[in-house]
Length: 141
Image 1: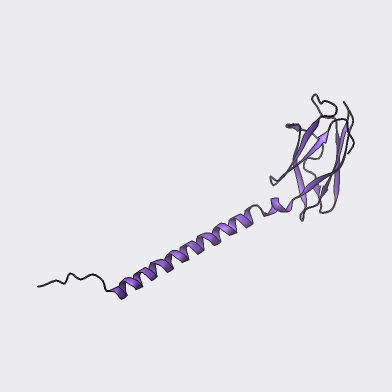
Image 2: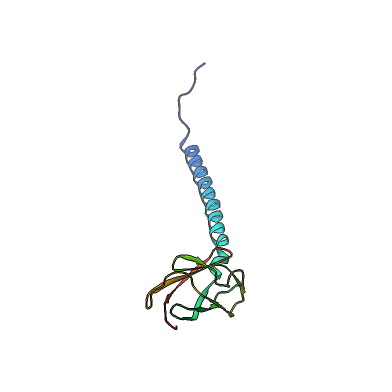
């Protein structure tokens, strides 16, 4: 028997290339939609949570009173508060703040703080969103 040594016809080769390209495009589309869905859905609640320092009063060597306002689009529950990089017991922990509402925490910060020096106040929500603001020791803002 004599076997033919011809390659696939150009038409068949073209059809195979089109099929591989379509399959690759479908796989890339499914991967991109899955990635977009994860990115949009995973951090959505954190993106909607927004707290700002509306006012504060920090007496030198005394109490610090901070008023936070929820300017986001969802209710926020405060998880923890840091002042100058140290975890602090502010009384704001586990407190819910509705959209458009304010909450005030008053406490005496522990540690040595210098008058006129800026310190970072970091508020972490229960879902992990982080909001920061700068407060000046011995200042009213």
